Image 1 (cartoon, helix red, strand yellow):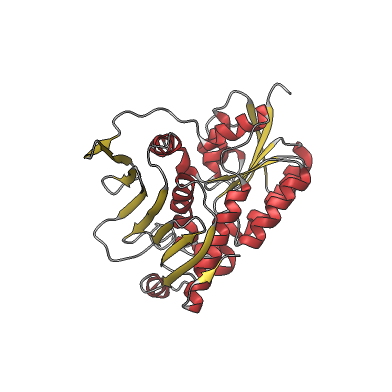
Image 2 (spheres, one colour; image 1 turned 135 degrees about the vertical axis):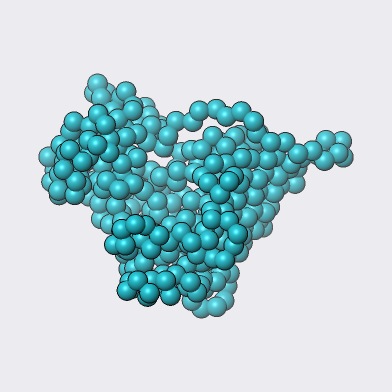
Length: 353
């Protein structure tokens, strides 16, 4: 292996996290980014970056011969840039959601196989210490057969763009053609993957769902903005192994909390519950179990550091080992999201073939 892997990032919104993550890894060099910012602005966002800034991502892919590329652009560009990066010879870490729909996601998976390159999806909530602790409990068999889950991310008012100081920021989120959907594909995708991962990624069988746009569409209209996605989605997902998962996601719903996140998993031997505290992105977990017929509750008090998704992706490429979030799982998530939107539109359960 070369002394250091060469990495590049396409997009410097959420891509800043990818760039900074690569800068922290000793075995990778961030040599280039494709962004609208100039070098000075990129260096301000990512102190220590001394590489090249390209306006054109395709030029970067052609000239830099990268080993790793992060794709961190609006959803409608995920497939295009991911496939281009794979075909350039790079391994790719793509931001969530994997694509606009399952068909695009499958094209990306097929391209990774055709090119013989790794494709990872950045479902970042798996990499929280609390999530890893939950997974260790599941993997030790302490929950037994898992048959029920509920996973939720609700905001009282947290609509990208409408809630920012710059009204133009994030408005592609409101366009179904560019975003693929609203809070379901933006927020719910995180909580859905987390629950599926803890449940062992069972094969989905059917979905019954509803979507609403009761609040955000009116707010967008008042600000002169077009709005074509939902502001809330709720679904029940049935799996072929008999398990059931409830899923709720909202940018705007009349609840007490500003930010409300929960994931609950129930098995025959025990249960797990992750929830955010103080309406922030800080989390606690609880574990419920029986001993000799007596019911006990436990709470996690100590955390173990977990390498970031970016660090783990570098390790996977460097050591030629699997990355923990596979493109197959990304496709499964998109199949479920497609079924949620179809069920909501048709007002009936939808089978997932």
